[in-house]
Each structure stands twice: as C-alpha cells, then as structure tokens.
Image 1 (spheres, rainbow, N blue to C red):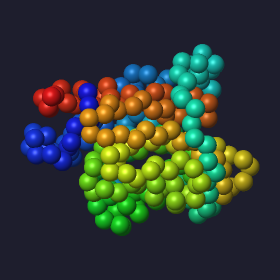
Image 2 (cartoon, rainbow, N blue to C red; image 1 turned 30 degrees about the vertical axis):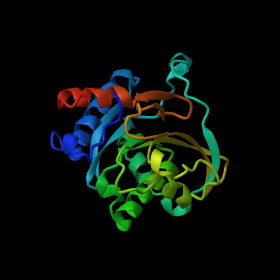
Image 3 (cartoon, helix red, strand yellow; image 1 turned 90 degrees about the vertical axis):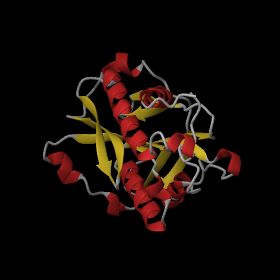
Image 4 (cartoon, rainbow, N blue to C red; image 1 turned 60 degrees about the vertical axis):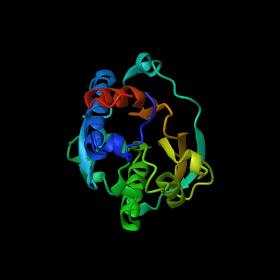
Length: 235
C-alpha cells in the first residue's frame, strides 16, 4: 500500500489525518501486543496534543536467548550524542514500582511541526526519551509543514552522523533510535535506522528495542494498510 497524501482533499475529505492517526496508533498497539513477550505491554497514549504508542514493562527481565534470536534489525548508523544531566529525572518513577516505559512510537501530526514552539516541545520530549534509554520511532508522512524534526533532534543531541538530506523529492521519513552507554552520564552513542520516503512509497519495518539486547519489528505498512481498509480509502 503506497503512502497516501493525507493533506489532499481526496483523502482528507474521507478521513482527517487526526482520525487516521488515532486509528493507526490503535492498530500498531494491537499488532505489537501480539508479538511482545510476557511482562511487556503496548498502550496508546495522548501527549503534546497527539496520540502515540508506548511500550511498558512491569519489570526489567531476562527474556532469554530464544526470543533474542527471533528478529535481527539491519545494521544501524552509529553516532556520538550528548545528553545533559538535566534530563536524569525518572528515578522516583521507577522506584515506586510503576510500569517502566521502554519504547515509544511517535506519529508526527501537523501540530507537531507547525510552529517553532511546538517543534521545540516535540524534539525536547524525544530527546528526553532517548536520554532515558527509551527506544524511539518517529514517523512523518506529512509533506507540509515542510520541516524535518529528525534533523532538529540530532542537532539537539549534537550528533555528527545520521542526518537526512532535506530535498523536495524525499521529505517523508521513518526513524528508529536506540541509545548505548560508555560509562559517562552526559554522552553516549545513538544507533539510528532511517528510511527516507515520498508519497507513493511503501512504509518500512523498523526495530523497537524493549531491552538492551532484544528488539521487536514494527511493521508500519501492515497497520497502515489496515487503517486504509477500515476507512475505505484504498486506491
């Protein structure tokens, strides 16, 4: 199923992107919960005016070599990044015995990149997630507003690699991020898997790490197709 132009009236008159977005997160949650091991749960969440997917663990556990061998993502781009200590804020959240967020999927809405303050808020949140070792996926399939939040995020964490060349024919993208440590509190390496896209392309499969060694595949195309069928907007 090729990516649709959700700002075109032929699509938006059938279903506004906000409604499509909401349904898409629901199907991503459903499909993740079919493959996540015991002790992990995907849930839809509302944050910064939009819905997202969070993957949580009741406790960090050893899920075994058998599960680790099920899915191997492609080799990532590895780049050094800086995370100031001001983002070390989740200690009490974990110590109280509540669920620990280990993964997040953000589907970019127009509101996330329409104004500078909204872009800064979105990037700050994503930076915070990566700093706290939360595996993150960002999906942007909206050509306008034409702003690359992935590149702004990489500038915020001061990376030297992994940027997406901003050119008109490849404005869309999906990116997965995972942080690794090297013994210091304010820096580390970030692994990046990115795919540049355009209207008409097929959405990729990306890894979402739920422990330091184990990732699950997020099949964005499969869930996107299900939403298109539900809203009867198949071409």
